Length: 194
Ligand code: DGI
Ligand code: FE
Ligand code: FE
Image (cartoon, rainbow, N blue to C red; front, side, top):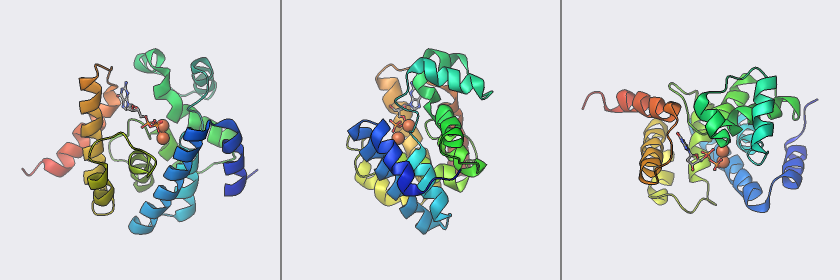
Protein backbone atom coordinates (compact mmCIF):
# COMPACT_ATOMS: atom_id res chain seq x y z
CA UNK A 1 0.00 0.00 0.00
CA UNK A 2 1.44 3.36 -1.06
CA UNK A 3 0.43 6.40 0.97
CA UNK A 4 0.19 9.91 -0.42
CA UNK A 5 2.52 12.63 0.85
CA UNK A 6 -0.48 14.12 2.65
CA UNK A 7 -1.31 10.80 4.36
CA UNK A 8 2.28 10.51 5.56
CA UNK A 9 2.30 14.11 6.80
CA UNK A 10 -0.92 13.48 8.74
CA UNK A 11 0.45 10.33 10.35
CA UNK A 12 3.69 12.04 11.32
CA UNK A 13 1.82 15.08 12.66
CA UNK A 14 0.05 12.72 15.07
CA UNK A 15 3.13 10.73 16.06
CA UNK A 16 5.87 13.35 16.42
CA UNK A 17 6.15 16.19 18.88
CA UNK A 18 5.56 19.66 17.43
CA UNK A 19 9.16 20.79 16.99
CA UNK A 20 10.19 17.47 15.41
CA UNK A 21 7.27 17.65 12.99
CA UNK A 22 8.21 21.22 12.00
CA UNK A 23 11.82 20.09 11.46
CA UNK A 24 10.52 17.17 9.37
CA UNK A 25 8.56 19.54 7.10
CA UNK A 26 11.67 21.75 6.83
CA UNK A 27 13.77 18.79 5.67
CA UNK A 28 10.97 17.77 3.29
CA UNK A 29 10.86 21.06 1.40
CA UNK A 30 14.60 21.75 1.63
CA UNK A 31 15.23 18.30 0.10
CA UNK A 32 12.84 19.20 -2.73
CA UNK A 33 14.66 22.51 -3.34
CA UNK A 34 18.02 20.72 -3.52
CA UNK A 35 16.47 18.09 -5.80
CA UNK A 36 15.40 20.88 -8.19
CA UNK A 37 18.91 22.30 -8.22
CA UNK A 38 20.70 18.95 -8.68
CA UNK A 39 18.06 17.27 -10.88
CA UNK A 40 17.09 14.49 -8.50
CA UNK A 41 13.59 12.99 -8.60
CA UNK A 42 11.41 15.46 -6.67
CA UNK A 43 9.01 12.90 -5.25
CA UNK A 44 11.82 10.67 -3.96
CA UNK A 45 13.43 13.67 -2.30
CA UNK A 46 10.14 14.71 -0.74
CA UNK A 47 9.43 11.22 0.64
CA UNK A 48 12.98 10.73 1.97
CA UNK A 49 13.04 14.17 3.60
CA UNK A 50 9.60 13.71 5.11
CA UNK A 51 10.37 10.27 6.56
CA UNK A 52 14.04 10.71 7.56
CA UNK A 53 13.32 11.10 11.31
CA UNK A 54 10.16 8.97 11.52
CA UNK A 55 11.83 6.68 14.11
CA UNK A 56 13.55 9.42 16.10
CA UNK A 57 11.09 9.44 18.98
CA UNK A 58 10.72 5.69 19.45
CA UNK A 59 11.96 4.24 22.74
CA UNK A 60 15.55 3.04 22.39
CA UNK A 61 14.60 -0.58 23.05
CA UNK A 62 12.05 -0.46 20.27
CA UNK A 63 14.60 0.93 17.82
CA UNK A 64 16.95 -1.94 18.63
CA UNK A 65 14.13 -4.46 18.29
CA UNK A 66 12.97 -3.13 14.91
CA UNK A 67 16.53 -3.22 13.56
CA UNK A 68 17.03 -6.77 14.87
CA UNK A 69 13.79 -7.97 13.32
CA UNK A 70 14.86 -6.55 9.97
CA UNK A 71 18.32 -8.08 10.08
CA UNK A 72 20.04 -4.67 10.30
CA UNK A 73 23.51 -4.94 11.81
CA UNK A 74 23.86 -3.13 15.12
CA UNK A 75 27.36 -2.08 16.13
CA UNK A 76 28.62 -1.85 19.73
CA UNK A 77 28.52 1.93 19.40
CA UNK A 78 24.88 1.81 18.25
CA UNK A 79 24.00 -0.38 21.23
CA UNK A 80 25.58 2.17 23.54
CA UNK A 81 24.00 5.16 21.76
CA UNK A 82 20.77 3.83 20.26
CA UNK A 83 19.73 7.25 18.90
CA UNK A 84 22.35 6.54 16.22
CA UNK A 85 19.98 3.79 15.04
CA UNK A 86 17.08 6.09 14.19
CA UNK A 87 18.11 6.18 10.52
CA UNK A 88 18.20 2.39 10.19
CA UNK A 89 15.01 1.99 12.24
CA UNK A 90 13.42 4.79 10.18
CA UNK A 91 14.16 2.94 6.94
CA UNK A 92 12.49 -0.19 8.40
CA UNK A 93 9.40 1.80 9.41
CA UNK A 94 9.25 3.64 6.07
CA UNK A 95 9.09 0.22 4.41
CA UNK A 96 6.68 -1.51 6.79
CA UNK A 97 4.35 1.29 7.79
CA UNK A 98 4.53 3.66 4.82
CA UNK A 99 5.00 1.17 1.99
CA UNK A 100 8.25 2.63 0.66
CA UNK A 101 10.03 -0.06 -1.37
CA UNK A 102 12.55 2.10 -3.23
CA UNK A 103 16.02 1.34 -1.83
CA UNK A 104 17.29 4.75 -2.94
CA UNK A 105 14.76 6.44 -0.65
CA UNK A 106 15.31 3.90 2.14
CA UNK A 107 19.09 4.43 2.03
CA UNK A 108 18.71 8.21 2.22
CA UNK A 109 16.77 7.66 5.46
CA UNK A 110 19.14 4.91 6.68
CA UNK A 111 22.37 6.92 6.37
CA UNK A 112 21.21 10.43 7.22
CA UNK A 113 22.96 10.80 10.60
CA UNK A 114 26.54 9.65 9.95
CA UNK A 115 26.50 9.67 6.17
CA UNK A 116 28.64 7.09 4.36
CA UNK A 117 31.39 7.19 1.74
CA UNK A 118 30.27 7.71 -1.85
CA UNK A 119 26.72 8.69 -0.95
CA UNK A 120 24.11 8.72 -3.71
CA UNK A 121 22.77 12.13 -4.76
CA UNK A 122 19.58 11.56 -2.74
CA UNK A 123 21.58 10.55 0.36
CA UNK A 124 23.61 13.77 0.11
CA UNK A 125 20.47 15.85 -0.42
CA UNK A 126 18.78 14.53 2.74
CA UNK A 127 22.02 14.68 4.75
CA UNK A 128 22.49 18.36 3.84
CA UNK A 129 18.80 19.30 4.09
CA UNK A 130 18.71 17.87 7.62
CA UNK A 131 21.44 20.30 8.65
CA UNK A 132 20.43 23.47 6.79
CA UNK A 133 16.61 23.39 6.91
CA UNK A 134 15.26 26.78 8.04
CA UNK A 135 14.03 25.67 11.47
CA UNK A 136 17.55 24.66 12.54
CA UNK A 137 18.99 27.47 14.56
CA UNK A 138 21.91 26.18 16.59
CA UNK A 139 24.67 25.09 14.23
CA UNK A 140 27.50 27.47 13.32
CA UNK A 141 27.83 29.19 9.96
CA UNK A 142 24.33 28.27 8.83
CA UNK A 143 23.89 31.20 6.40
CA UNK A 144 27.15 30.25 4.67
CA UNK A 145 26.32 26.53 4.55
CA UNK A 146 22.83 27.27 3.20
CA UNK A 147 24.30 29.23 0.30
CA UNK A 148 27.06 26.69 -0.32
CA UNK A 149 24.52 23.84 -0.45
CA UNK A 150 23.17 25.27 -3.70
CA UNK A 151 26.66 25.78 -5.16
CA UNK A 152 28.65 22.67 -4.22
CA UNK A 153 26.87 19.75 -2.57
CA UNK A 154 29.97 17.59 -1.87
CA UNK A 155 31.80 20.52 -0.30
CA UNK A 156 28.76 21.17 1.90
CA UNK A 157 28.69 17.51 2.98
CA UNK A 158 32.36 17.76 3.97
CA UNK A 159 31.93 21.02 5.88
CA UNK A 160 28.91 19.68 7.77
CA UNK A 161 30.87 16.54 8.75
CA UNK A 162 33.85 18.61 9.90
CA UNK A 163 31.63 20.92 11.91
CA UNK A 164 29.76 17.96 13.45
CA UNK A 165 33.00 16.17 14.41
CA UNK A 166 34.33 19.40 15.88
CA UNK A 167 31.18 19.75 17.97
CA UNK A 168 31.29 16.12 19.13
CA UNK A 169 34.95 16.46 20.13
CA UNK A 170 34.39 19.72 21.99
CA UNK A 171 31.41 18.33 23.90
CA UNK A 172 33.21 15.05 24.67
CA UNK A 173 30.66 12.89 22.86
CA UNK A 174 31.56 9.47 21.50
CA UNK A 175 32.20 9.49 17.79
CA UNK A 176 30.81 6.78 15.56
CA UNK A 177 33.48 5.54 13.17
CA UNK A 178 31.09 5.96 10.23
CA UNK A 179 31.00 9.72 10.75
CA UNK A 180 34.79 9.76 10.63
CA UNK A 181 35.06 7.39 7.67
CA UNK A 182 32.60 9.57 5.74
CA UNK A 183 34.56 12.74 6.59
CA UNK A 184 37.82 11.08 5.49
CA UNK A 185 36.26 9.97 2.21
CA UNK A 186 34.99 13.45 1.30
CA UNK A 187 38.19 15.08 2.49
CA UNK A 188 40.22 12.84 0.20
CA UNK A 189 37.79 13.42 -2.66
CA UNK A 190 37.87 17.21 -2.37
CA UNK A 191 41.26 18.06 -0.88
CA UNK A 192 43.62 15.43 -2.31
CA UNK A 193 45.20 17.84 -4.81
CA UNK A 194 46.09 20.38 -2.11
O1 DGI B 1 17.84 13.62 13.96
P1 DGI B 1 18.32 15.05 13.84
O2 DGI B 1 18.60 15.68 15.16
O3 DGI B 1 17.45 15.90 12.98
O4 DGI B 1 19.71 15.01 13.04
P2 DGI B 1 20.74 13.80 12.91
O5 DGI B 1 20.04 12.53 12.61
O6 DGI B 1 21.79 14.24 11.92
O7 DGI B 1 21.36 13.70 14.34
C1 DGI B 1 22.09 14.82 14.76
C2 DGI B 1 22.89 14.50 15.93
O8 DGI B 1 23.69 13.35 15.68
C3 DGI B 1 23.87 15.64 16.21
O9 DGI B 1 23.71 16.04 17.55
C4 DGI B 1 25.21 15.06 15.98
C5 DGI B 1 24.94 13.59 16.19
N1 DGI B 1 25.94 12.74 15.56
C6 DGI B 1 26.34 12.66 14.29
N2 DGI B 1 27.37 11.81 14.18
C7 DGI B 1 27.60 11.35 15.44
C8 DGI B 1 26.68 11.92 16.32
N3 DGI B 1 26.64 11.69 17.65
C9 DGI B 1 27.56 10.86 18.15
N4 DGI B 1 27.56 10.62 19.45
N5 DGI B 1 28.49 10.27 17.35
C10 DGI B 1 28.56 10.47 16.00
O10 DGI B 1 29.43 9.94 15.31
FE1 FE C 1 17.91 12.33 12.34
FE1 FE D 1 16.51 15.37 11.21
